[in-house]
Image (cartoon, one colour):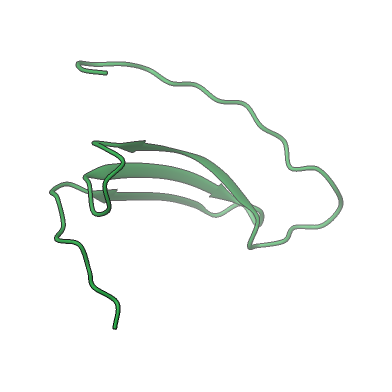
Length: 64
């Protein structure tokens, strides 16, 4: 996908309570490779919202 676009989403957390660890959101990535540029918009179960992004490709990290 290239150029400007608009994405809309509707959701509803099911069940009682406000588990802070449950979340829903949308992520867009430049590719499926590890470390690719991305942006993620997230709503957490306790109402916290977050916007995270990586604007440039990161080198792949090696696990020991």
